[in-house]
Length: 88
Image 1 (cartoon, helix red, strand yellow):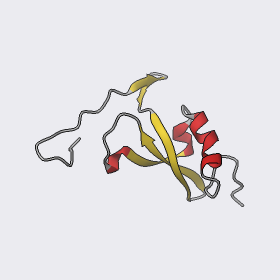
Image 2: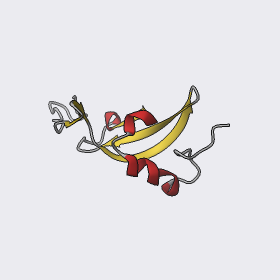
Image 3: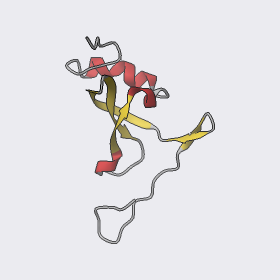
């Protein structure tokens, strides 16, 4: 990954295996939105430097290994959509 600092590459921490697949660890859930009727979360990834690639929009189905972060999201951001939000 390229860094914003000239002549400096950011080394990523190694992904950890989850059910025979490598997966990055979520540091926190920052936002939510509906995309084509499905709930998506803005996830911040652990161990990455402060750059735009540290945060990505992920469907809720991609955060199954971070259930506590998803569950706690509505209490931290009550105006945003959460896992128990009605999409009617």
